[in-house]
Length: 518
Image 1 (cartoon, rainbow, N blue to C red):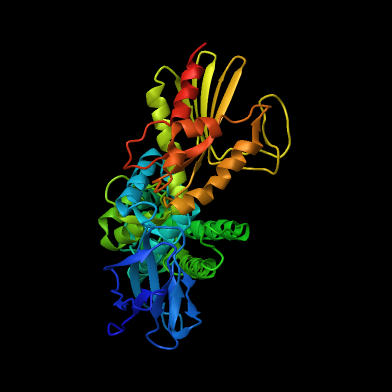
Image 2: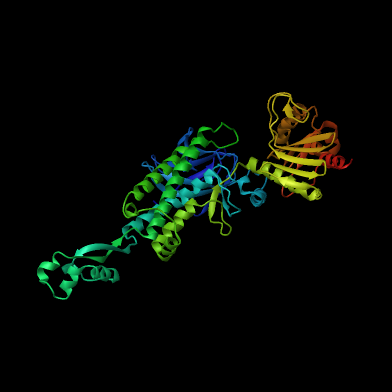
C-alpha cells in the first residue's frame, strides 16, 4: 500500500496548499495546537485514527476528515486503516505549541526542566508524546500501557518462536527394569544387587539363567528429555507477569476513563479508550492461550532463577523474548538512550507546573538559611519560628473556619499557586495564576481570575496581598506589569518564561522582605 497518498491543509484557509503526509519514521511538521485541519480520504472505506481516536468526516466535504489538535504539543501517532480495521500505514505528526504563547524550543525547555525535577510532572494522557530518559521508579498507568503496546506484541511473537523449538534438558530418574533389558548400571544399582542373593546367584551362574532373569528387576537409572527446565520456568514466569500486568492495566484504565470529567482544555479519553481496551483484550487472550499450550503447560512451576537467567541469556531466541517482555513490564524510566515515548500533559498544565517548580527553586536559592521540605505539591521552608510555603493548586472551600483555615467567601476555588509566609502573630499570602497566554486580549480576559481570587479567597480573616497572573509574554499589557499599579490595585501580570530574565515581582520581594524582619 505504499502508493497511498494522504493530503492535508489548514481547514479555515481556503487558499492553503495541500501537503502530502509522509509515513513513519518521517516527521510531518506544520501542525499547531488548537488549529483545524483537513485530511483527505485515500478511499471510501478508509479510517484515520489519531492517538486511537477516529477522525470524523468534514461536514462540508465528505471526502475529507477534520482534525483539531487540543492544548498539547509534541509528536502524535496516526494510523490509516482499511474497512477491516487493519493498519495500512503509520504517520508521525509534529504538533507545535501555539506561537502566540511560546516558541517550540521554549516549550521543550520547560519540559526538560520539569523532567529533571520529577518525571511525573510531564506524564499525562494527551495525544502528544515525547521521548523520555529515566529519572527513577515513577509509574503511570498510561506509561504502562504504552510499554505493553510497544513491546507486548513483539514479546508474544518471540514466545511463539520459542514454542516451535523449546529448550529441553535430560532428567535422570530411577526405574525397576527386568535384568535382561538392563544396559547400564550405576553404584546404586550395584549396592542393590549386593542385597539380592538371588540376583547374585544368577550373575555367578549358580541357577538356571533363563528362568531367574525374568523374575529379577534392578533399580537402574533412566534418562529422558523434559521441557521442565530452568529456562522454560523463567519464561513462564515472564508470561504470567505480562498477563497480570495486562489485566491490571486494563482494569485501572477502565476506572480512569469511567471517572473522567468533561473538560474544555483536555482531550477526552472516552473516544480513544475502546481501541486501546481492544488491544489489551487481544494481548491478554494471546498470553492466556500461550501459557496453556506447549511447551509451557509441561512446566511444573514458574520461577526466575540464576540458572534460568543464565540459560536465557545464552539462547538468542529466549534472550529476545525476555528482552521484549522485560521492557513491557519494567517500572520507571531508564537512564541512557532516549528510546521510549510517553503521553504528556496539556501545554497549559506543563506551563503551570513549570512555574511552580521554577519559583520553588528561586525561593530555595534566595532563602538559603531556611530548612526546606518538599512534597509532591508543596515546598516549605523553616527558619526558627518563621516559615514560608509554596503550594500547587490548594483548595479554598466555601465555608469559613479557624484562624488559619483557607476558605472562599463564594464557591470553592482552586488557584494555581499559593505563597504563604508566617511568623508569630503574622500571616500574609499571595496568589499566582499561571496562564499560558501572551496576546493582550487573552491576558485581559484571563485577568478575571485574578480579580476573583483577590476578592474571594481568605486564610482565616486575612485577605490576599495580591493576585498576579504569570504569563510567558505580555504583549500590550504593560500597565498591568507596573509595580505601583500592582501595589494600588493588588492585581497585575508578571512575565515568566525560560527566555525571560525573571526575578520575583516587587510584591513578592516586599512580602519576603517584610517577613524576614521581626
